Image (cartoon, rainbow, N blue to C red):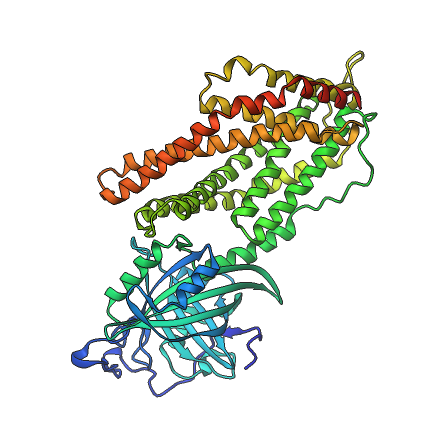
Amino acid sequence: MDARRRWSLAAGRPRRRADQGRHPRRAPQARPAGRRGRQPAGRIRGPAGVDGTLGVTAPPTLEVEAKFDVLGRAPTRALLRGHDLAGLPGIGAAREIRHLDRYLDTPEGRLRAAGWAARLRTVDADTRIQLKRIAAPGEDGVTRRTELDGPTGPDEDPATWPTSAARRRLLQLLHGETATVRVTVRQDRLVRDFGDVDCQVELSLDRIAALAGDEVAGRLTILELELRAGQLAGFERAAAHLRIQPFLSPSNATKLGWAAAVVANRTRAEALPVIGEEDEPLSGDVPTAEVGRRILRAQLRRLLERERAFLASPGPEEIRRMRVATRRLRATWRAFGPIFEGRTSNRVRRRLGRLGDTLSAVRDLDVLLARLEAWVAGHAPADPGPLAGMRESIAARRAAALVRLEAELASPRHARSLDSFVEFVETPGLETLPAKPPAARLAREQLGGWIWAGFERLLAWEPMLPVADAPTLHELRIEAKRLRDLIQVAAPMSSGSPDAIVASLVHVQDTLGAMNDATVTAATLRAYIAEHSGVLSPTEARAVTRFAIDQERAAERLRRRVPSAWGRATSPLARRRIGRFIGGF
């Protein structure tokens, strides 16, 4: 059977078989394996006749598994190839397996609505039909769900396949409808077994590719732990060991859900507006409104590129880049916005603010997680367990923030705002505020004044530097960033060099940014300790407190560097450099 063949499963009237029409209670029962009826497998079998199997062969099993996002592949591979896993000895060497999974459903989503997922899994030349109950992980992060498995046949009609629980349930769920392949996933798995006489588990490092036709729409790497045989105690011990590893993060996502979202994102990415490159250089002899429009056009083009990259692979780096692109758009709009009027300009301003806030909610938690990982690697004891609970809490908040971001990008209002924004930047003269003489109207007549006004706002911070607290100093960082962004967008129109000016402003931003990150991290840690005071063990409380104290000390060290950074950006030399830059228009 060709694994790449597109299936269309027509649930026609099934052929009558020997077991058809038999009452479940009279169907052959599966005899329990093992002594005194104890199930040897973690895939715990239920009684025949349950879940619609009607007593056919291969009764349902209970799949028990836990998934983890992989933050570091090298240590994960080392874990998989290690001597043991939480006391369970390794069994044999790791083996490589490739799966091709084609998930089935009707156009109306009949299987999903019934709470089932169906897939055709091909390994080598063998294809089997597998059905799984859709179930969320429990509070312990472990997923428990019914699984049915059975052989397929050369015909696409499931009614012609060999009798199995999976075939029978699929026919019942389809109820005469036709199922087609909705999502295709390719998995390259590095698998190894661990176990003893009481428990056997399978640990697999899965490199997953969601396919759209013959092209890869997205990639994901996860670690999966599954109970294969024996008692739950060994599995739970192994899962707890994995949860405290700094290079792993518990995951609630399913492969089907992730792949479906990736393919949908690819469709959305293809539907995003396309803006061509600008050929002509910027000129100061052009009206300021049109210079601003062209700068906004270039930055919107970059934002759309970042959104496409995020939809293809929504990782921390793509989120960071998209937030940077959004912030630069907002900064440019803040500078040029007053020379525009109308509904479009007001709508764009609001939408950019909403998008920026949604991106920041995810990015700020990424920064917090990164600081936690860095501190664990450099300061924590060998056992990272005491900080695992806090890490899981942050990861859960980040997952919720990511869901909100994805919903925002998928919303119709986001699509409408992008269309309006594209129309705005592609239409010269649209919603431009009329300038009456002697008001300035050319870019070279206005931009210099805007830049100097921004520099004056930076100078005005001098009396506040000794007494300002961290939230107040964060406003200084914003002022430095706005001035830097304005100078950078105006640079093509000036003969003066902006490099030294930008470098001094970046130094202010970086110093204040690092101080703010340390301050926010410390405050978050203190809040976590207060909220979990009755839950944290003494060891956990001490570990989190040590981390908080370390961040508070780092913030204080950075606070002492702020006056020096500000002085470099506002020195007499810096003033002369800005004057020469403005004179170059």
